[in-house]
Image 1 (cartoon, helix red, strand yellow):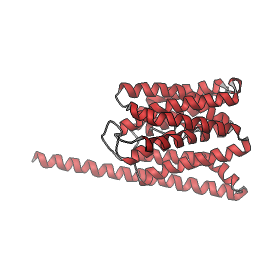
Image 2: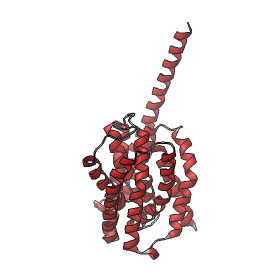
Image 3: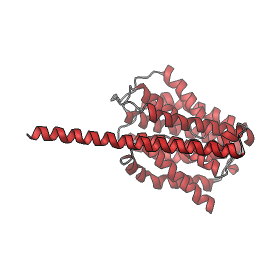
Image 4: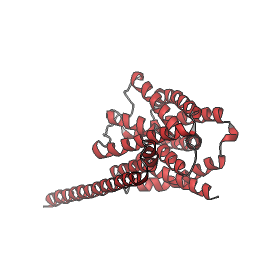
Length: 303
């Protein structure tokens, strides 16, 4: 029972992250599931099975709000599904000893990417409601995103969403809505591949359900959270959290142990906290300056 509650809390936390940033559900969920003791292949399978349900709800919501470019969904989602099948098959064939450092490396890399991106290059803002990108760009992007997502337990959003936002050619709401909708194809394909390789009896369905319930409960809170905490601070905080949950495995795989392991872990936590605090202070200063500028402009007009 304790494990079920823990997994529900993992789903809750992951949905808060995903709702605030438009990415990170898989990477956050898989990181915590590994800490909870699941094997890499079981962690990824559990996450993708739960995501099938959350992707349906998310896709319908985005469609009703007009955030979906169906051509973009097809052009990135279909190759993403192919990549997910390949990634899930590769992960299922690896031994636990080989898979654990591999997944920690992928998740740690995704965490670093998210953190550095929100420090140095926040997403651009565009207004086009239909993506101008062609298949020669979207097909390789979908293949890589799907493969990393299934083999690493997450990565579809960090790779696909951030790449499309970086291009600055499509409105953020269309990018997020279309990528979220296309993720259903990726999650469904990965889930089928895991079921084929592991068998239905190999899945702990109570964990899938707990993860799904936790995410559903967190959804409305995430909507509130995104309006209260700047995305830049959330990105740095979440990226660091993903790195931290995988750092011990990475250091141990590199031959670091004992006191050196503890010092390395502590050093990262200090630097990460420092970055979050520094960025929070910066954002607060910027908001104060913007508020003073607005007040000054209003005072000038009233004279």
